[in-house]
Length: 192
Image (cartoon, rainbow, N blue to C red; front, side, top):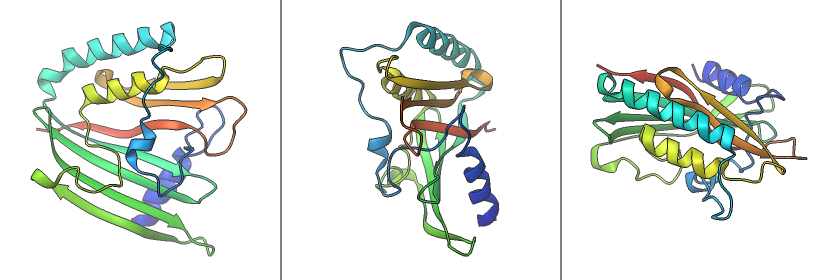
């Protein structure tokens, strides 16, 4: 299973047009992944329009999706590592969060370097992993990520079913290796 998850994350982590690597080292904490926007910049208008439409779609879908779970993943191509955070939300409250980090070995194998599960009051207690954010908080994170100079950055914004963000990232122009910052939601499921 570890090999399949790592291979999946590795595949998601590459590609020039949808560059999914991140600029942060594998030991960076989740706060580094969602930096504050510069107050003097705003989200480019075309992206803001897409975000507004997605949020409206989510608000319409939310009544039948009060409980949900998503997996946010990151891959570091040059560090040969990946990590995935699973977050479960029930009625706008995080109730569970799991994390797994993997490293590629010189022989081609994969090693789990960290793995844990939180539930109840302990959700959010581990320093690693993405924060246990609701869909609404992910929209806020995304706006902060996209409030960058469009002449200096490439932007990646993908909206999934129900208006849920699948990808929200930016990459500074001129940087090609593991320098994309943001998040990728590889799986999102409404729960009964």
